[in-house]
Image (cartoon, rainbow, N blue to C red; front, top):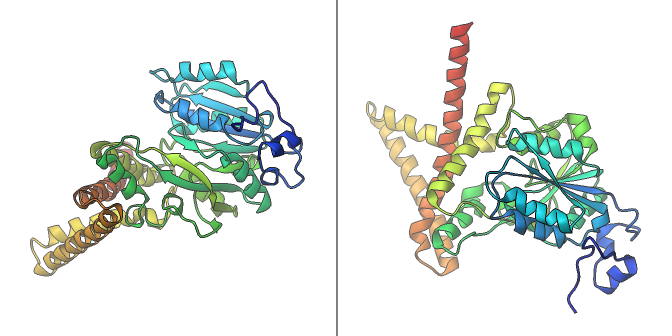
Length: 374
C-alpha cells in the first residue's frame, strides 16, 4: 500500500500508526511524542504565482511533520492572476492552510505579516517558487533544536522549469562554484553541518524576531540576507544542513535571468541609503571585477600599461569562463553547453555587477539631490 499523508485534514495518525507506515519519529523529537512537538508556522509570501503555488502547497501537504502541529500562512500580495483562488481551494480541503492579504505587495511586508500572525514557536520561511522534500520541516525542526541554532537552512537544488538547454544552463550556472561563489546552499554542499552567514528560506526560533526585530521593509529584495547578517552580528548561529533539501525553479531564458541578477545586485548595494549593510564583502566581488575591467579599459586609452591590464583581466575571465563551461559540457556529455554556459555565466556575473553599480549610482544621485535641497 502507498504511504498516506500523516494528516490530511480528516485522518489523524498517532505514533504507533506512524511507525507502522515507516515514519521516523526519532527525526521529529527526542521523546518520540507527537504531542510534545513544537507548533510550526510556515510563512509563504507570494504574488502572481499561479504556476507554482499549487506545487509548493502539495509539497508541504506531503511533509512527514504532524499537521496538527503545523499552520501554513500564505501571504498574497494582491495577485492579479489565479493565485488566491488556487490557495482558497486548498483551504477548503486543509484547515491548517490560511490566506492573508498583503496590500503593499512587497516580500518583506508579507514576511512580517506572517510573523505577526504566526502562532508557532518555530517559523519556517518558504518560497512559493520552490518545492520541498517530505522531511524538510521535520529535519529543520530537529537540527534547530539539537544544535540550539537560531536559524537552520538546507541545500537549494536548482531545477529547470522547462526541458530546454538554455534553462538547464541557467540552473548549472546558478549552482556552480563559478556562478555561486561560496554560497554553499546553492552548490549542493554535502560535507556535513556548517555554520554560515545566510541560508535559503530558513527555520527560525520565533523569539529571535523579538530579539533583533523583523525583516526590513525598505528592502524589496535581499531582506533575508540583511536579516541573517543582522542575526549573525548579534551573536546568532545559522547552520547549513545538507540533509534539508528544497528545489527551486529559476528564470527560463537569458534575458529574464540577467534582469533577475541585476535586481539582486541592485538590492545588495542600494540599501546603504537606509543605513543598512545588506551584504558581506563576497557579494561585492562581481562589482569590483567590472570596475577593474571598465577602469583599466578607460585608462588604457591613454596609458598602455592599463590597456595591458584590461586585456589580461578580460582574457583571464574568458579563460576561466570557458574552463568551467568545458567541465560542465564534458560532465553532461553535450558540447552545446560549451556555447550556452559562457552566456549563462556572463548573465549571472555582469547582471549582478551592473545592478550593484547602479545601486551605488542611485545612492550617489539621492545624496546629491538631498544636499541640493538642504
